[in-house]
Length: 128
Image (tube, rainbow, N blue to C red; front, top):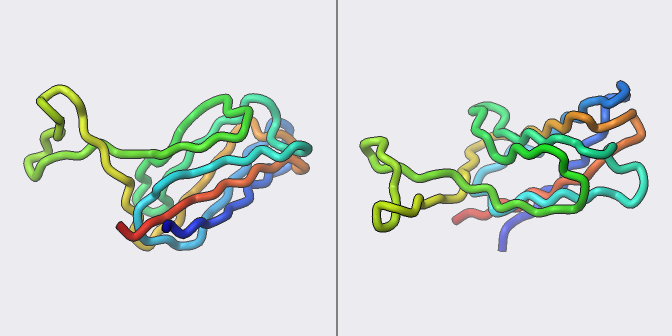
């Protein structure tokens, strides 16, 4: 069963502002990220998400115009020791969970709205 970390992102108060939030330091593999938009005071229409690992800069989830509750299972392409993309039957790329090693997850939301607007993110981390 993965551990779930809750991160609340609140807008910076500028019109069509930006919200930036950080998870605690994590180690493991990202299973999923769930976004909950509250019934009132949620981010303005069409917020854009850019979620990365803070130190390494590894991209986790980037999506525009996320207007409703959603869940994503981000994965990264796998490669051989030679740097060649791994595929099944030389056709279908193979993806794996994104590893996190003593880093925070950085959540940046643009087009967030004024300082009363917020959203909640749930990050599930497993150890395998």
